Image (tube, rainbow, N blue to C red; front, side):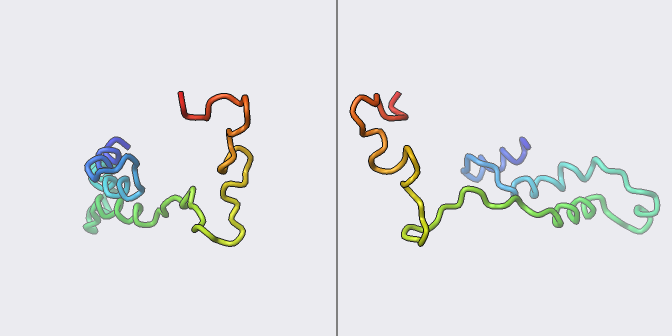
Length: 99
């Protein structure tokens, strides 16, 4: 995980993407596995084994996607505590985030 975080920082991001972990997996894990003598004799490479496994793993589903503005059925700003009228009542105290 630390290697993935480092890659994200070097790319100027403050979050780790699945591609960061996948890119680091082969060099980090290939030396940690032992091949059977038969696999070794057949010329199988540990890096190829890890690469094959990583290539089969699906990334996580996208979370927190927002609907485009003006999309039908959009409920943006209608939930309690959101929208332009939130926190505008008299005597309700300071707005959130103004600490």
